[in-house]
Image (spheres, helix red, strand yellow):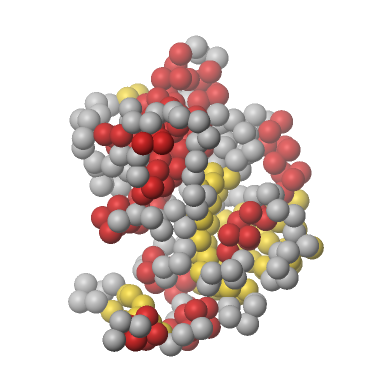
Length: 314
């Protein structure tokens, strides 16, 4: 099981990051606007250089680990969902998602490439995986729509779908739920939690089952591509690590029994990582620089209340 370590990583804004995340764990990143959340992700992905320190994968510098993966034909390590997503040129939703399977810096590319020698079977596996992901995200009906003709919220789900096709060992999410309506945000949360319990891809030996119909959305927890994977037990031993940057602490407050940690950019400019169960109202105040309390609903869901936000409506 691979682990990312942030070894005294100093961002260009001067914030020092210490901590890490392993496969099968959540790392929820909380912080105010401009605190360094997105900067941290871009530094992690190598898009912006760090001022000092390093990112390690299983004890080795990330650049060396990525090179070894590419030489082994595994492609990249991260599946990345940005805040805003543009395809650059018009493609259908289905085509855009399938392109996520291409090998590259971020995508793993291993599953379909392992089948490529068999001719069309690799392409068929990618198409089937893409269709399953589109159904799970509730955007199957958009499969033939062009990405420049759908809403911003729908495009955010397409971006997430393409990232799932990349099959990286770490899924990096930069506020992808920000533009989703309430029902789609709920579905997004269910999906992300479900990824920590199920295999996500088509193994080298897979048998397809009947799909759920063009307009159905299956909310049960099972493989996202709706297949019977003969290697499912082996795959479940190595679940993805999820680095999730969000403005909404609701998800972080309700991780339950999931292995999760909080990475908090505090108002004094420091970064702190700690187990999710230790997230308190006092820490929320330190993050957002406003009074906060944590309440519990009748169904046991913990949710934050910020007095300044309520006061703005009085």
